View 1 (cartoon, rainbow, N blue to C red):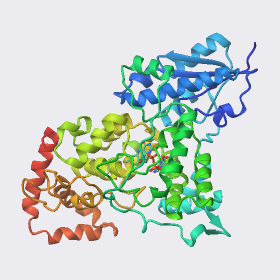
View 2: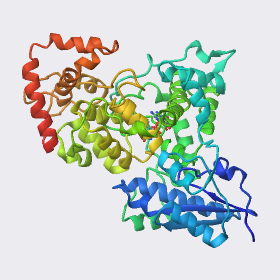
View 3: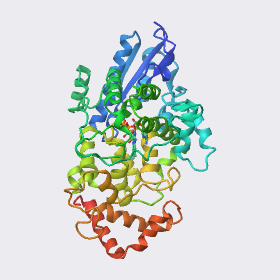
View 4: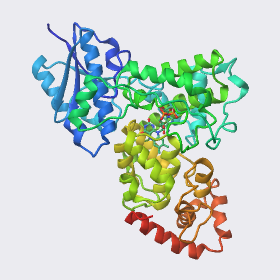
Length: 492
Ligand SMILES: Cc1cc2nc3c(=O)[nH]c(=O)nc-3n(C[C@H](O)[C@H](O)[C@H](O)COP(=O)(O)OP(=O)(O)OC[C@H]3O[C@@H](n4cnc5c(N)ncnc54)[C@H](O)[C@@H]3O)c2cc1C
């Protein structure tokens, strides 16, 4: 057979209906998937994450073969080396790929002469997002989201939002419920491909993550049936007796292509139309997918390659030992979140934002070190999604370009939204003394350290002015130093 194109499919474009495969023809196209050494060993990746990515891709490659495609799944030092090997076998054919999801891959593939087709794994093209962003004074997600609802005609009636409101946050954001019966976790059985990958990686995988489209669809149906109803009210809570709450656990599949945002949103809206879930949960979920997810991807490309290196608050503390080892802290909330991540490479958005990032922010951990750690640990991490979420939202290292104020919070917030404070060595109400909650002490210390910057920010000035009421500020500053030293030593 003579072929006319090589279609390169990265590990996050695993979908036959989108990207370069959309117009694939078994008679003219060779499909290349490359497991690069750089991807496997370039960083100390969480093995659950590697397992998920590699196994999903091997399953996908097998599926393409069974449909009559000529597929090359190669192991190579780098992606480019792999593509060279495919060319060596099939001739100097043009290589096509959908626009890749990171600046680095974009640059590497461009330099090799790869031709790109539009990345339609998102609902918003990069050019469309840029034309929105260029018209904004500040890049408010809420404004972008309302535009998305109208443009995509989702949850709209006669030009107005269904239910007459754009936002149901007031009904949501409840603390974790007591004596609540959570649905059982959905588990995914492992097949021969999974076991082979697990063996190669020296890893015993959990049964949390599916590695096929069928499994991803099961996860979607499980969400609709058991979780959509309760998604909104508890979306910000952290419970002691359940690590997933009513979150969908769909981000890994949305990000590697096994599911597409359009089908997920359609399914959720269908459940709403059938009267199976209330508007406050349906709207909250739709907001995440057509709002936050699209906004974050758009901002990654809009803000540019250098954005990841920002460090406006001059945060230079080394990564705290507790991030890599949950036994290196006595703070219950942090210990349990890091322990969860150790097991299954996942925690929902509030542990990511208000526990892990909040801690990195108020302790002044270097943003790039923290970004690297988050990028390595999470099942759904990718450059496009981690860079804005960490640099912009998590640790405010961009000086407020993306979010108007830092997400800094003390122990009172954690006491309200988690069930970790009861039984913890530290008391969220105390800011000084040996039993003071490190979050409470460091929250005030953080505000004090950056008061000159934050006092100019009208959304922060009230918090900064609160410093004036602290009669024990000198004592608090001393305690903050002790806490910071203890955190760096892994003893707090
Ligand atoms: C500091 C920080 C880091 C994050 N890092 C990642 C990451 O590396 N990869 C990732 O996919 N998400 C990331 N998120 C967003 C969010 O935490 C995860 O998408 C979510 O926890 C995944 O679980 P879920 O599928 O059950 O989500 P659900 O709560 O069920 O939400 C539904 C979907 O909304 C999308 N979504 C919601 N918020 C965001 C967001 N801020 N950015 C992108 N997508 C969003 C996801 O696709 C998610 O699957 C991060 C958020 C924060 C605050």
